[in-house]
Length: 483
Length: 142
Image 1 (cartoon, chains in turn red, yellow):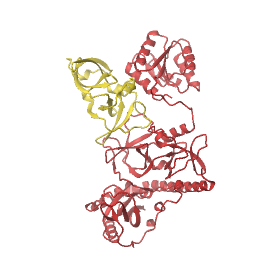
Image 2 (tube, rainbow over the protein chains, first blue to last red; image 1 turned 120 degrees about the horizontal axis):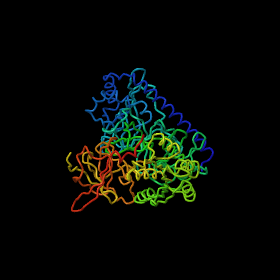
Image 3 (tube, rainbow over the protein chains, first blue to last red; image 1 turned 30 degrees about the horizontal axis):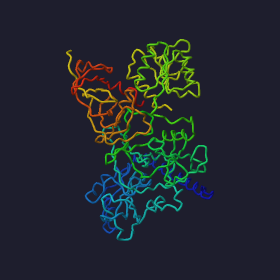
Image 4 (cartoon, rainbow over the protein chains, first blue to last red; image 1 turned 135 degrees about the vertical axis):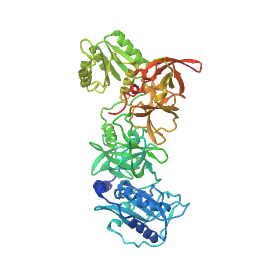
């Protein structure tokens, strides 16, 4: 349990990080407009600066460059001239939020193979200034952890850095060493472990605009989270418990529920407890913020995201995919859906039993025609469901209240209480409102279909056109969401 | 139009045999790495990366409304082309290519799923010829 002082300090850090990310987001948005009008620099200027950088670093070669966003594309032709040297390509050594905003950094250093670290001696940073993309030489003496994309490393700069610094080249807050209280220091800096150049699926529809994302690991899998919906990144958190909503962390003086991302996504079953001290991200959903504990903050990427197949259900936790250079898939999360799902769980709303996929689903078939009842029972029993039958709406409603089934399949045309009235009665009962209902009817008119759906049915199947596969598929689909 | 055999790929699914036309079949792949898709439901096994193309892998038994518990470990998938893009169908064993007799020319293939009798490997099988548009009608986004 943290002390009040620690708590106040955390709140301060959270506020600072929130403000920083807001400023960066605003800057990034402003850049998008500027980029439409921007003109790339004269290639000679860039090459001259790189020559100067090599002089500063004692003739060191280029060991890699971060290649981000529109600015990078504008400069790509210029950088092409460097590729005869030792340029790593579109990988990156150090990648920060600032880099994502500014667009490009070329890292220079002397490469020495077979050693573990690269020492970043200088970098070329490009920014938007008015109508021009303006490169700036930024000397560094920052040790960057992580493998050299060339398979070697850069040595210490052989000569002191002496190039004049522009205001933009002053040491950046994001590059300061983390404060001692790492458990509460929000920082957008993430050292790259492995460069992951990515490419959009050629056969998929892709938004050609790169999407700045934070890549995280959860449940043994990597996910990309769009930067614009990240409220806060925390390298380490210490959740507090005691809230009726479960574990929470303090953000801006308010508790924000925290969940294990892998559990929310369904690929793990662990819960966040007060013992969790790993990293977390706070996401902005449509109506709330929610924190997610993750295993690792992998790094920032500008990703060209391919949209999901239209055959896949919507809305889902995943909004798109990216194929990495090794052929693996990176899933891009939809924070709105993920937050909504986590909030629903955290609120304990409709506390429902975990789905038991191993027990047969209970289906109640309602039809006053004996032959139809038996046909439907046979079809659904053949699919492994436990089927009960009722002949009237009233009989069905009583049976449902006695023992709630997992799905109701009812004829619309029943004597007395018809299928539509039965559906409305189910929807009006808070205990039954979530019950999936399939209406079967001989009425094919659009108005009848509309009436059935307005009554609350989840599916409307025509008796004349129905076939076994469609009936089973509809029932299976709706049972996929059963509590 | 004279009746002619139509080439199909036989899919072993949940103890039964189903078929898709060769004309809509792109390839048969061994499923080695599937990326799970969170919250996608029982019909979706995950995503496959096929030479740079992302293809959804469906649990064929679930699409057919069959008992998914009866499905063996997914080892193969048949990649088919639908009107809404490619899709992979998980099957229980190695699919087989056969000629489906008793169907008139391709242009006359029924829009509904139809049942046929075929003989393969000395064994008589009842096969349901699947219509792709119907199979995927109940899945997907808006």
